Image (cartoon, rainbow, N blue to C red):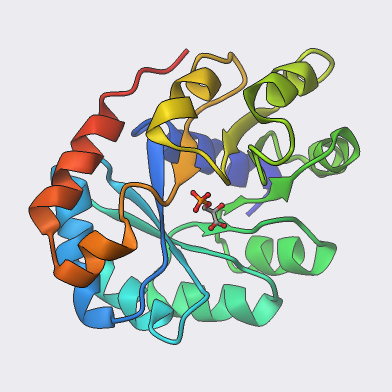
Length: 214
Ligand code: 3PG
């Protein structure tokens, strides 16, 4: 897959809903009901971070949910890419980007949403052909005003800002012409996950899905 194809596929995913839930799953038994709750609330695109031993099993379970698009986040190595694809991930997300991981994703036909935090990182990815990128960590890097400023000289790059994004500030990003969607963990909080409060998670998803885009 070329970087241009990867970007057009991640752009299509980002246009399905204003928020991509970023999920940290400790118990794979929670994966399916969690995915069903989020999809029911209007958030079909789900990022499962490869930060827990249960993550790959969670992706396998979530891949069975009708209407869901499950991807793997926190991809750090070519082996992560291989394991994510084997588990059924249909897209990949990384906090940054290295040639090794981009080579692996392109070879594996896994559309990547690679991370960038500075203009130089954005430009390096753009040189390679990635026009859709994750702005990470969004709030710590200056938030929506920083992303707006990056967009002045680099309007051809579209972003999914992630990191510190919440219901309260998501609208600031979504109002920007260079923001396609945002990523965030707030729609699947630990307490609701631990309690198996799927209705509560659907309610959070519905609220997030109602956020407009700019
Ligand atoms: C992460 O890497 O955990 C994501 O950026 C999500 O960040 P958040 O928990 O601040 O939404």
